[in-house]
Image (cartoon, rainbow, N blue to C red; front, side, top):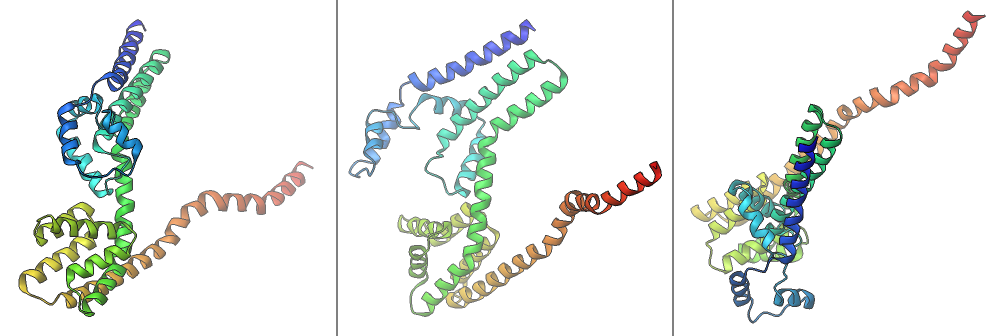
Length: 301
């Protein structure tokens, strides 16, 4: 018991030290100078953010983020970066903040587990505690994976309509890049954002092939990857882009209809288990209850 109390005190001291590091550690001056040089000449839309950046108190300027980066394995950092790209890189979830959050969540869960284990020691408590600490540490990855899946589904749903718009624009005489720009400007979902990002990559000097492949890698949607492959092949072999867009749009609409039919066919199978476990027992009680009571009264009399 004393050993567990000492371990809990040590874990709690580590968590407090991490918080003190976050509050008192000075900002990375070299990084701040680099960011200031890159942002020189641009107006800030948020005065509060400008004041924080000028004071060196930006969310990613603290020492805890650098400390968390040193403690986090490189593979985990690369996985977080890929998940952030698939999730659209939310403004409130920068990589440095996620790394610091992983560290603090793991420390907090470890402290709670140690305190609980000191009160109720046992093998089951240790197993549950290990699972709780693991879930708390990997919670950012789970949240990002869920958000990336939702975003991928939205892109998959919007792809057919976006290709229709691009097909109409190309057949009206616009080029492929202009059609992509118009679809990105008229759209409001994640696919429109990715199209605008792809055009920006081309404008800053990337080749079209690299920009299209980066689009497929960021979104990680099978249908969009297939469309990008078709566009790259059309650009390589000189195939008319209008024919490619028309074929891909028809295929995407067909696949969307097939996915809807598949989900509709899955409904009866999914309803069986709630029907058997929840509805049928109550129905049997309501129908057979009075008869069972009458039979019991008849035999008891």
